[in-house]
Image: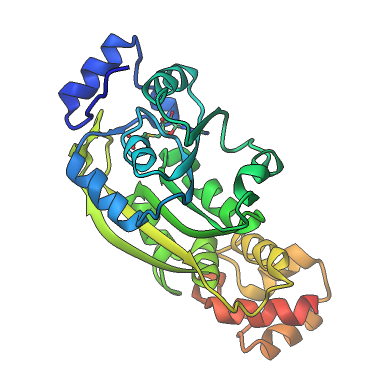
Length: 286
Ligand code: SAM
């Protein structure tokens, strides 16, 4: 297939028409329509030759094609069969891409382990994420045993605030705690909704995460994720109450652990730092 250049809403519209495709709102299909932004994202990915990339939701290939051309080996997971057909034609000349038609929420990691582990090296994860899966996807990054070295994710600006929020702030939630514990996180730039076609209602932010090395709870991380998620289900309750719902233990024992972890039992979950959650996790599960 002839090479295409997706750099304007007009061109995207033409491709969609030519291939009888329609942007589906339910799958968050807002395609990148600005080469300048594509290049800025790829600068953050910082591709090396033969590197392994997992891309979630390649869409029309705005990020995929330049990565493949740079000789990265890309595993692209796309839910929409129409887009998968288009991408297979677009990429037919390249052998360093594997397009998987699947729902990222259901992909069994063991089915992509051969891709991940062939080289024994960590992968990079790249996505202009559909908004409806951003939270579950970020949780999965921490829960799964995929070895990744960098995640470059475009997401709704408000979600990026949540991932970076500090204790006591309006946006602080369980994902803020987990991101601070697991990663070094930064947000190199924001983009206005006008760089997408069709334009979404909200602006977006590029988030770059790199896993922290030497994390302190290396054998208790599943428990840490569970503890933080459960406690935040009752974010308006005090710590002693929300932990009582979760653990169903005697309140005096819970108070003792909280005090040992340097947490006031009357504090609310949204004022507790990731380090204090780590203290608490160690006390409860060790
Ligand atoms: N990467 C393309 C770009 O930047 O132009 C498209 C990004 S668009 C915001 C999100 C893409 O994710 C769409 O192609 C959509 O079909 C795909 N998608 C939505 N939900 C998905 C899911 N559960 N699993 C895999 N892909 C999904």
